[in-house]
Length: 587
Image (cartoon, rainbow, N blue to C red; front, side):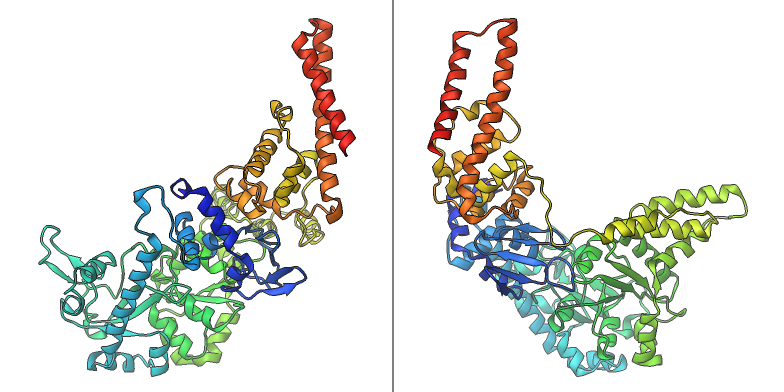
């Protein structure tokens, strides 16, 4: 997509952007020597392992391995596409993007800001209605106090069919916003007269992203309407350009607003469950917008905590939902992550139960939640009759494909051993050997094998100004040895753009398959002293020349013995020898 934006503009944007300032505006950085350190925003950790290299204008996390430049950070942290990231940086610097294509003249970011502003207006409208009698009666009956109403910014959608149209539909822009955000429904596509409000006679819950922007709404019907079986109890905004239901988790913003480190998160089904538990002092609870959790939602949860506890309603539907959540979560279970389940008594939900037993008793349920290993094995044992051989075969076919989804090596081996013990199979000491191996791994260490081409390319990426010491590439670019074409391309870029820094140089290769490898080389600790960089670079290039010359000599000797050398081949060999002698003489 970056072909629509001039490369020179992207380079200028990166040169204006100080990566430590950019990242510090979103997470807290602490200066450590020349660099900065922080808790990684992309995974939960107890010790800070996220490093920002100000000189190289890039970052790396030694915990989860993420790395990149200012553009990479915004794309990952804000969950933006490339074009959106460039627009965000341009807006930050007050620049206008000189698009190469009319398709991107109307910027995505500015349109999103307009939608966010309009959603705030809608929320203000709903909030004014919360004091109406029917809404007041419902919230009082459910025991929701004023502090919670204010904290979660609750509102009320009037029972009339067109309250939003009356309030906001008089301007074409507002009318278009209502349609784009799914706040109104057209029962007849060919006739705008058959339009009505999506949310009517419902308590309204604004759904916020992790930065506090309202991106959608959820609505719960009042108790007086629950006898109408055709009316869903909960209703949500449809997917829009700012809201995707299968990724969203209700309550994340409120949790992150209160605490930096989140040891655990309790996942429940409904908004009211969240409100009640928070009111009772359990302030690490979220809702999954129904009981159908998605892989994207679990992934988002594990980005902010290492421990998830599911607590769905105590009915058949809730138990089925717990089993679905378990199967979906398996592919996210690294060895550092935990997953637990609470199974409530029949007919209870978190809202009703905590009001009966109180906070302390409910917290005991949380502390005694069943581990995923116990739930998985117990559930699997019920799926086969182990009184006959066929039952063992059936269980193996069901169990091991599930267990093999787990990426965490130790946890996967542990579950295999646990299931084997249940089946009466004696396991070996493979788990113990693996744990010993894992405990001896070094933390905060990127191991990259030193080779001449890695040193050459790595130094050039970290110090693009080294290119000024090598002006003639016509001899080396003839060869296709591994790494040579890339090195030559890098050198030509540096010659053409002598002021390029590491950050800008990497950006040229964003869409190439070797981009990740180049980013790793950009932060590689090659342990070469600063005053030896130039000499090492030139000496390494000479070694490469030596290696190429030796290979070419061997080829020529073999060719000479069999066929003889042409005048052109002899001259090529002479020129290579002359160039190599020149480099040795100059250095």
